[in-house]
Amino acid sequence: MGSQWVNSFKVATGVSPDQSAALADLREEAPELASVLGGTRKPDGNWEVPPMTVMVFVEGDRLKFCLSSQTHARVAFGCVADPAKIVSSIEDALVKGAFEWKPRKGGGRY
Image (cartoon, rainbow, N blue to C red; front, top):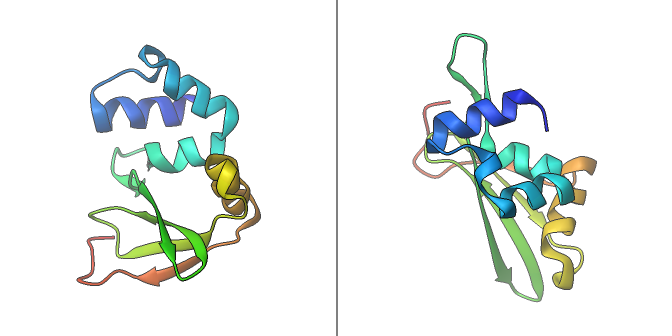
């Protein structure tokens, strides 16, 4: 993963991603998801894409995911293709663009 993700993760959490074996594993298994969770900063230090949170939930007979941030005006929803492989299913959806952005209830700053 590039230094941009590492720097944004350090700023957001105060922890170096190298300190966590779990995060190293996530960067290996799902680099796009790791990037989304870490956020992306502009050269001026402001957020281009703020760090996101991923939630997985059941809706009817489907397992879905939601990516959101407290400060972002939109949230992304998608379906988990394989419930036994949640992380790789979300990674695949992110890579393929198989998700839908919707306005966040209550708005956001971005």
